[in-house]
Length: 126
Image (cartoon, rainbow, N blue to C red; front, side):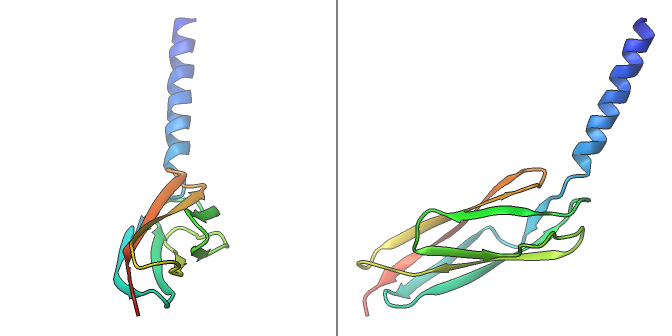
């Protein structure tokens, strides 16, 4: 009986380890972008490119930002192993000249299911 329990524990451990290794996984070129100084009246955009370095197709289930002034668009089809995807973020300044810092939260089926990207900069007057 003791040998059976040890064998089952071993098989279960291998199964769990194998399953965890097959997950999709992000590899971003960069995770933060600094726009520097931008005019208060001009929207700016940046593209965050990534590759699925995992074994399973990567599916982005939700991409959200910290405010309505920051709008994401992203690859909505499954990204196979070795293929690339894109998250484009457009920031539209509003109000008075100030430094800004925004986050973009990505939910997916990756090994680490939540990933956060950042943009920052400073709006300047006309």
